[in-house]
Length: 202
Image (cartoon, rainbow, N blue to C red):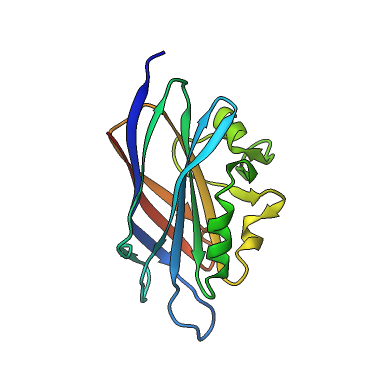
């Protein structure tokens, strides 16, 4: 099978804040979006890159903000085996910053990442390999529950406020430029955000 070589870049362009909350008397929320890109190939999975994006915001809401200057995730990849990209997005309202650090660190070991779709008929935690090959895989960002080994990601966000997590997968070959909406939180949650993310290939 011939080599498939490409460079893939992932970056957010905006964060739409439908509802924003930082607790009583605590001012405006401080949104943080963590993105991670993985490559899954047969039974192997590896982290390609991760980045934290910070947004400055002031009410009233709803409103849309752009990220502070920060590089996208860019990586070159060559493979002989058909595989797919899996992307994770995590949204956190930052207070102490400890939760952001812990979640960012947890993305490093790809084999410890487990996720499942709560709306699935059989919501069972899956590793990234299982997610990429199973019926919970989504081609557009969908909300998921997320764990690192046996620890739920929402609990690891202690010190900051958990908002939500999403995942989606793309094949090795695809459109040169695609834009995605990442839904975080819900209509009943104190924070409801949507991140706009671009995936570019060349």
